Image (cartoon, rainbow, N blue to C red):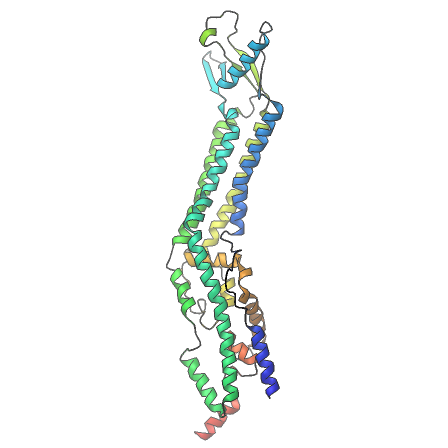
Length: 392
C-alpha cells in the first residue's frame, strides 16, 4: 500500500507547476496578432512607398521636363524647369473659351504626404499603448498568475487529502469530512472568479479598443477620399501647360504664354496611388472583422478553466453582454496562451475527463486528481451502505 501512496505522491508532485518568481512574462503580448498585422501594414506600407518615391527622385533627378523654345539658353531652360516645378499649375482653355487653371501640387508633396499618412496611422496604436496597455498588462499578469496558482492549489489540496487519508484510522471520518468540505464549498478559491466578474462591469479597455479601430476606419476613409479627390483628378495627366510670364518676364514679348511640360514620374505616382487605395480598402473588412469579435464571447479558454474549483463563469451563466473588458482580456489571454502553463495540463484533463464521466462524477481538477491518486471523488458505495446498516 505504501508503494501505491508513494507513486501517487510522485504523480501529484510532477503535476505541480514550477514557481515562477522574479522577472517573468517579459514576452507578454499587449497587441493581438491581427492588430499587429494591421499596424505593420497601415504604418509600414506608406513608409515603403515613400522610400520608393524618394529613390525615384534621387535616381532620375528632376521629376519634370519642360520643352523650352529653341532660342532659350541652357540657363533659361533651367529656369523654366524650376519655375514650372515650383508653381505646378496647368493652364488651359475649356471648350467654351474660358481660361482655367488646375493645380498639380499632389505630385510635389507625394513623399511628404506618405510620411504624414504613416504618422497618422500610428496614432491609434499610440493611443492604445498609453491608455490601455498599462492596465491590460497588470490585468494579464495578475490573471495568468492566479490561474496557475489556482491550479497548483488544487494539486496541493489533493496532496493534503491523500496525507489525511493515509493518517486516518477510520475511513468513515475522512469521507464525512470530505463531504462536509464539499458541501460548505471549502475547496473554492473565489478571488479570481470575482475579479473576472468585476471586469464584466468595466468598459475602459473595450472602449479604447473600439476607439482604436474606429480611428483606423476614419483615417482609411480620409485617405481614400484624399486619393480619390486629389490623385484621381490628375491620375492620367502626363503633360501640362505652364506659364512663366510673371514678374520681370511679364512684359517680355519673346517669352511664349504657355510652355508644355511633362511629368517624368507619372508612373510612380500612379503605382503609389493605386496600391495605397487597394491596400487600405482590403484592410477595411479585416478591421470590421476585428470589431465583430467583441460581439461574441471567446469561451475557448473559459471552458478549459472550468476545471478549477472556483471558476464557473460559464456554468453559472454569469456571461452577459460581451462588450466589456472581460471579453477583451479573454482575447489577450488566448493570444498569450504560451504564458499559461496550466492551460496545457487542464486541456489534457478535460479530454481525459470526458472519457470517465460515465463511471465517476467529476466536476473539477480536484475530483480528477483524487481519482488518479487512488481516491474516489465521492464516498465509496460500500462505506455508504455500511453507514446505512449501522444507522438504519
